[in-house]
Length: 147
Image 1 (cartoon, rainbow, N blue to C red):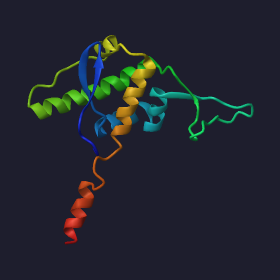
Image 2: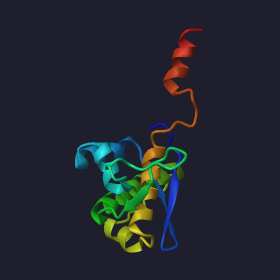
Image 3: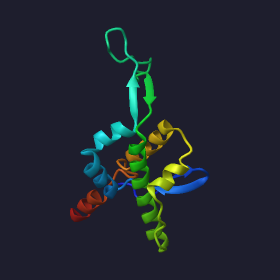
């Protein structure tokens, strides 16, 4: 994965590591068909439209609208996949056993609005596509080979 550091989410005062790595993306594709379809399910944005049905933009060119409540099932899936991956990485780094948490336990502890939870999980989904460094391992290896 491009960025292997952990992020964290706090649910009812308890902090959990979250991670969206290749294994999570694979599971998302298996369950939802594509990452794009999954993204649309956890972050639902309804644009404001003008009288002709076109999206309204503000002075900066950003579409104006509101976030809609995602399905709790989709949020539960995302939360459990990402927390499980985070706990696995945390255990690997600390050389301790993997802590287990059920999907139900996470949903019971979720104390933010569904929209806020969806936005937090979406931020982690997007984070996994960004690189910290402009030079990837593959780029670095090619430069070394050419020397």
